[in-house]
Image (cartoon, rainbow, N blue to C red):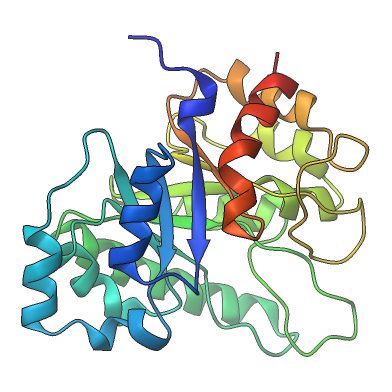
Length: 253
């Protein structure tokens, strides 16, 4: 069955959202794919005791809704599986120092442990490619170029570990969106994250503007791979993102 592109574009509600309210909001706006970050305030995973978890699980699940979480913590994977999450978007971790190889190996070991643990609980782990950092910054994100991304994608040996491609992060790097589209294992990509930013600029999450990131060519490249995954609007505020789904779908035509 054909699904309109606009219906495959979800909304990342990020940190401010309370899980219960986020589900209600997404349902009211006809959003079928929703990311919520459950690491802070009322939505920190430590706030989900048995009683609250039971209430979340007992609430009617809207038809066609797919829910995932964006997390900084591996410990929360257990709670995510209890909350009917289908996926958890993670980062490699180990962001400090310019000593690259030991950090990459430590990140790989961590991701393998998490993916194995999550797979037993029915949660898919999505690894996001990140933005570059200024040369003199203390933090050095992995993975922000194609080679770093493939290092992890090719070595975590589990069927529950998939790429999450963040187009605006790729737009900041030397290989641009096209380099990632050419190199990623698209048979495994399950999410493409969307926001705008200036080429070779700083990491920003701006509303889509084809004068910055080339969204038409981005969609042409990702759709040509035959992916059946979803997209995720990841720019704020949330109130602006449902309508942007139609704008982006028009750009893809």
